[in-house]
Every structure is written in structure tokens, then in C-alpha cells.
Length: 102
Length: 136
Length: 130
Picture: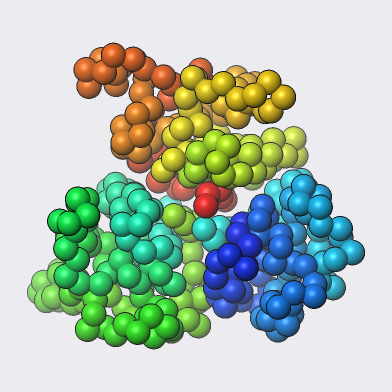
């Protein structure tokens, strides 16, 4: 019974991503969208926390939002999946519920 | 989901008055109560501030909606989950929160508290148990 | 799969409405159903017919109206949130004694019950907001 979580804010601006990761359970997916995609980049002050807290969940980013912000996929934390809008829909359909962290 | 009844969770993470989300979320809860679903409210992060007692909004000129929480019991909304860690991080204790009660008709209408203070881990379990999660 | 969609922020200021629109378009293309989109908080402002975005930018309201026309999606604007923010259909304008209405084609104003019903009747409820 897995949950798809979405986070749409930069973790440098709000606590939302960390709160989401603090509540996600093993087997869940956390999808970063809109300004949330900044949370998926490597070499940041949060990268260790992301890797540590993100261990049991699948981390994903919405690729169109990365491209819009000029973030090359090579800059992502290792293990982060990229999806497009079709992939976003697929994630929502294959998880049992969605929790959108606002 | 059993018998066409879904578990609805209303997630509150924002402080009151600086934005309208707390108030308009409560308005959904009140309307939603008429639909006989299994309703819970979650208060975490800054959402715990919504339940702090003694709110006096006269000088900011906006309506104090905090008394509405005390009416939730009459609407059969009796599960207000408040996260312990969120309280701790903000220097709050149970004593800082409003007293919100409901009457259990199965136990001779004895009054019971609607606020259930739970750990972050328990909150994660509550969330994972829901059918529909509404965030504001 | 039936998706219920909530848009809870206004057009242009937040990306919420755009992300919701792209999600819905992709869901429909994949053969899923999106019977209703519910607009709440500042999301009600997506339903104004008076917006004039720059020519080289997308017109958010027109995108939604066209989607509703093509797919029959029910675009519902919450009456309580709409009244606060001045989004009216002609019936509401007449009822409340206002001298104009501003709702766009394809949108309708209704109560919060429509949001709860959507949660009950769909398989997945998604909220796009702040």
C-alpha cells in the first residue's frame, strides 16, 4: 500500500521536503515537481540528508521542471529517477494514494 | 475502504491568519462532515499553531475562527491528530492547545478529547492508512 | 483510473494550475478519466474570462475551457472561495446585487460538496497548490 508524495517547493526555501521525507514510508515514492526539483540536485548542503532520509523510498523528479530551470540531469543525486508528465500519471496510478505536500 | 466509506485525511501544515489555508481547510471539513466518511485531521509542522488557545484577533481585524474547532465534535469529526515532534520543535505542549471534546454516544455521551497527540512515526502510519488525502 | 483534481492556487502567480493542466492532459492521453477539476482558494481565479495575458504566453483560462469542451471535464469553482474573491456567474451577480459577472466558458460555480463527492467517486485525488 504505497504512497506517491509530491513536493513542489525548494528545500532551501521551506521545510516541506524534509517533512515529507520524515513521514514517507519504505516503498513510497517522493516526486519532486516545480521548484521542488532543486531538492534532487547533488553537492548541496542537503545532499547528505536526502541520501540518508531517502534511502527507503524512491526519489523522482519531473524532468520538464528540471529543464525549465536549467538543471542538467547529470547534476542529480545518484539514484533519482526522472519522469515526464506521462510518468507522473503512471506513478499516481500505480501507487495506492497520493499525498501532495503543500 | 469498507462499505463505500472512505478514509479522508485533511492535512494542516500552516499557521493561522497569515494565510487563509487554515480557515478554508476547516470549511471543507464542515461541509465534508455531511457525507458520512471516516474523517481525520492531521496537524503537523506549523499546522499545530492553528490549535493554540486564547487567539484574540480583534486588533488584526480578522474573524477568529478557532472556536469552530470546538464544534467539530457535533459534526462527528472526532479525530484531530497532532504531531508531538512538531509541538516540541515549536516549544508547545498539550497545555497550550484548546480543549476540544466530543460526546461518545456509545458510552453514555461521556466527553472525550478529540485531540490525539501522536509521534511522527505514528503520524506516518495514519497517513499511510488513508484513502483520500486533502492538503491545504 | 479516475482522477479527481484540485487546483488551489491562482493562474500565473503559481505554477500549480499549469502543472495540473499538463497532468490532466497526460492522464487523458493515457486513457484515464478526469471527470472533474475543482478550483479552491485562489484557484477560483483561473475561471475569470477577463484575463488578457501577453500574446506570446499561454492563456490558462482558455486552455482549461478548451479541455472541458473537448473532454467534457466538469470545471467546478467553489462558491465560498469565489464569493470572497469576486468570481461570479450571472446568477450569483444578480442574487448578490453585483453589477457584473466574470466567469469563463466551461466553468461552473458550485459548493464544497462537489469536492468531497469527487474524493468519494474517483480513484486518486491530486492537489496542485502552494
